[in-house]
Image 1 (tube, rainbow, N blue to C red):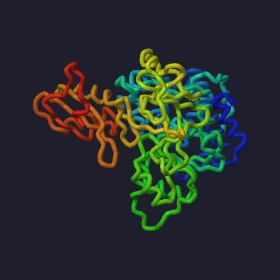
Image 2 (image 1 turned 135 degrees about the horizontal axis):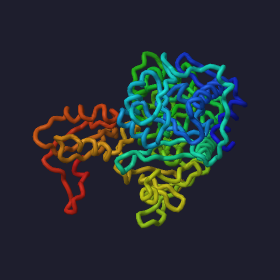
Image 3 (image 1 turned 30 degrees about the horizontal axis):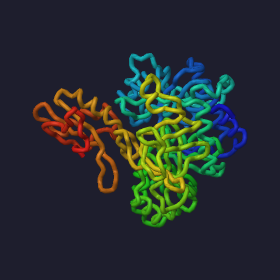
Image 4 (image 1 turned 180 degrees about the vertical axis):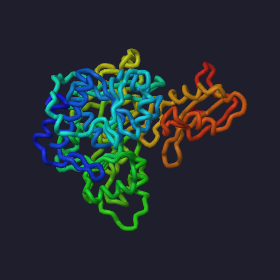
Length: 488
């Protein structure tokens, strides 16, 4: 099993009659999913997509999203998943940076997709909704021809938020994705009997990593286009969900939901929490309500899954041990390896990790060194090998699991004619939830609503500053460095 197509077809052969995906009232088996993949592959091939071409997937969690990824992979083309929450400017950046040839989406997003790709030569196709350009038909499966693909060929482009002001393109090969699925499933013990509920976006590395793992073992995938607390609770109980990947925000909301009667979550064997630190309050609250502890998971766009804490409630704040075939070490600023319980930068070596960022030679040299990816996260490893994350070297803001690059938001704000200076940072409330704050030096009079209105439509809603503070000047050091700690 060397490529994504090999992985998929192996599962189809072994578990053809098992339910593959459930989306609302729609249920399809792996056999039907295979036919859908072949059908869409034929459609894309007839539209000129072949080896090495880039195809953007602008779709919510759905049968069509999963079909798209495996169809694109089977042609030797490269998937570029784009979050449906992104606005036109963001979609345009991803599309142009990846040089996409086709963008596939749903009818609800047609105008956004067409506006975002206008003048770029990209063709938009609708494959979900009432007015679709493609709909599943077994009749055109005959035209399908699987491409000749090597393990080292690129399979997907994901984007990592970083310190450059723009997302960085991360290429993952077929070999990387196969290794990720192996590492993940062997550690957690996934099987074909698992039923996995996806509310985290499949377009994000976290959701996508769980998708590949679920398909590898022939698990059933239940997909929701957006998070809805009551639907999640109903599906967990009625469908006997066994694995639920989530972010702490979701878990906290579910734990606080009013329920007129007790709900049965006894089928759940694993709740995965990732994307942001899991507070002790949410950890305990969820267990008290539903009788199961969430398990902290750690990963990155550059590496995929890194570690998971599968036990020991006393160490709830640890992200556990590295998954199989992954090595984690802690390094000091001087380059030496840290001692037990000594804080330093977390570095990862994994067969599932990328080798660098496209077009960013210096950034690649800085964070990919001696076979390790230096995460920018500060952490430590205790005497029993448990990994803890204690902070970030980078400035990234974590909004309910969504990563926000403050430089990107600052660059947007500085284009406003009434803004002279702007600093964007994350601030936490007393429960540890982080929000985006903008400190602005205006040119004359300005109100917060002008900032909100300007940002809306240019960047995703979760990136828009929720707190706006106006100042006469930004505090700086004698060398001109912004003193962010004075702005919190």
